[in-house]
Length: 247
Image: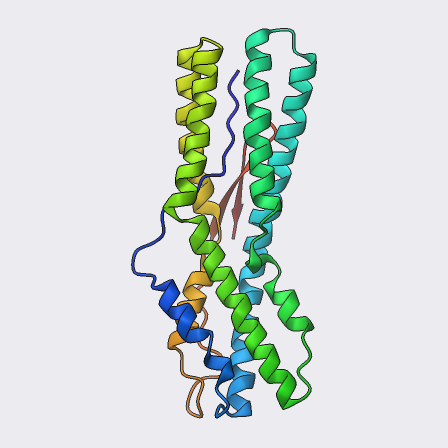
């Protein structure tokens, strides 16, 4: 019986100078010469972008969390009730890898999943409040982009791919089933790449656009949003993978 736990991430996209964008953006709202109408435009821009990315981020967050949790529960049941030793061993390995997935999603939620609500809750009745709100919105944007980039970094990818290798080695060496161990490791790595494609990275683009956009007197109040594309989602289910097509 084969179980696959998926939560590795792929390397960052080339050409995204996120650190530079963040260092520039971090100080925009602190410019005391910025007019109040520009502050308002920037807030509207951030709110619009956050609203646009919330649904994808929440789908990703809750679907993977639910899938990993279901996998932990089902595999724990198999460990406790299965009479065949190989199936129990596979399930025990699956419990550990799935639990790691639960923790990786639950302990570090995507900022993009809650940024829109947090920014909207900030007061903006006075000029001083709007400046504080803008600064807070910029920090939310930076946090979202930074977390998206971190999850696509090679360090995280290496850690979780190593986990898949160790899971395969445990089955292949400890339980003396090298073929099953190889299948488990390879399947986990492939599924990990599928996991990467479903992870929202829109905040990285939003940060770059925000850093380059002019919000002065002759600028558009809302820079155009990218055309909405159909989205294909993959998420873990108890003993497999759930697919969804959103349009």
